[in-house]
Length: 388
Ligand SMILES: C[S@@+](CC[C@H](N)C(=O)[O-])C[C@H]1O[C@@H](n2cnc3c(N)ncnc32)[C@H](O)[C@@H]1O
Image (cartoon, rainbow, N blue to C red; front, side, top):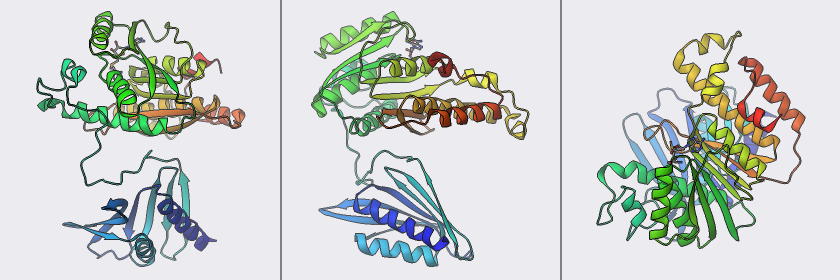
């Protein structure tokens, strides 16, 4: 039985490599404690016309890289798992598989939701840019690039965030069936740089028909954004003054809410579910509603007595429950990192893609109930909105 588990792991590895779904594999927990080799990370790379497995060896003091043909690479991983390492984490675009092996060579695997949405084959090369800087008037007007279309010194992080956002949206849209004319609502669009960039990317890079409405309660931002959209001829991009709660969005395909504070994210998800959106993408922030309700009297109390841990736990619970509630309403969910901590602490993204499969609502309700009871939570605001 335990050996079987290792075989299942190997089969999953082979499948991920054959289908180019391997994002990365990490071999860890060295068998020989005195070995200098700490871990190995393996990724798929496109080198000229060939597909290779690139091994990055991390030693105590330095790193080394070696490329293998696919078959050789898989053999090498199998040998390393027998001789050098106990554990492995396999990240594919479909799932995350963890392999644990003990000293008696008994293995077990754990299959988790995927952490990554796409494979980056050219990880050592310059990343693909999804919007052009050349003659880009909206990035110029929004203060991200200079008059001669260069990224401003202090705007590299913002530009990286825009590209990361477009990369995520591109991979999420790949799963949508009907993309003839996408109707998109961006709730709490702010200054609009992500909204403009998305429109530009969909129209000019992906050649998709798209109508995007940014909803924003600050009138000055709405007016500015509409003037800019008109000036640069983004004819199907418009901005409306209004609150997320009260704006009628009609029929939409995609609902987006990035950094809408606290329960504004729940209002946005609620609108998306009600509009039967095929895709809902939110990057929540300021998760206060659940934190205020924490009333922990079990073992977890000794952890959440520390303010910072309580805050982080509240973020996890708030967003975890959001994902579960989306599942109740027929969405397949993914929760993943939007942009790393060094750029912004608001780094979690939840994506829900509508499916037509069966949902065992009762089972999810029980999970919701158990989690709430663990933290003494009376209700999640999204449950209230959805009347569940
Ligand atoms: C932090 S900014 C994020 C802007 C943009 N989505 C981004 O990620 O760059 C949040 C914006 O949402 C707007 N906002 C927050 N709550 C809102 C609500 N309930 N209805 C409409 N707009 C809201 C704020 O005015 C602000 O411009």
